Length: 112
Image (cartoon, rainbow, N blue to C red; front, top):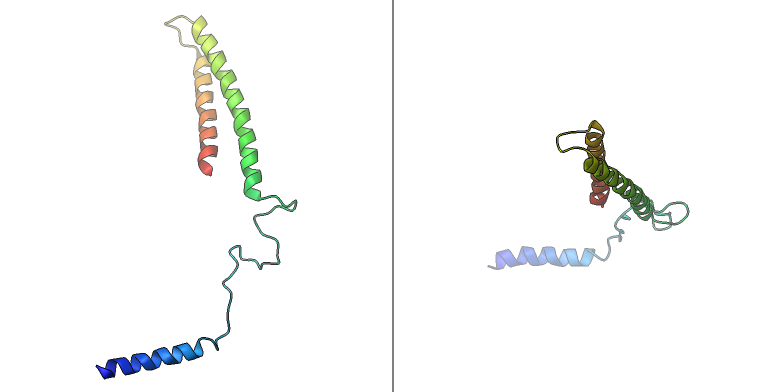
């Protein structure tokens, strides 16, 4: 039993004695830059890049939503004035455009 503890104790003692003598190294900065250098996620005006992207995406989504409402209303008007047995090509194109805009809005929302 002494044979197991003696080498382990000796190794632990050496490690404890040498650990303070080793130079301290700071972990690398998460952005890969030093603390004095500007952060890569900040724009030159000081704002966060992700905040600006989110703001721009929000504005695009608002514009797309307005276009979506406009197309949906015009589609509703076309369907109301058409006969039950008539399929308008323009109505079909509007439904495809509505789907396209809705997918675009959804993909922006899922991004973050």
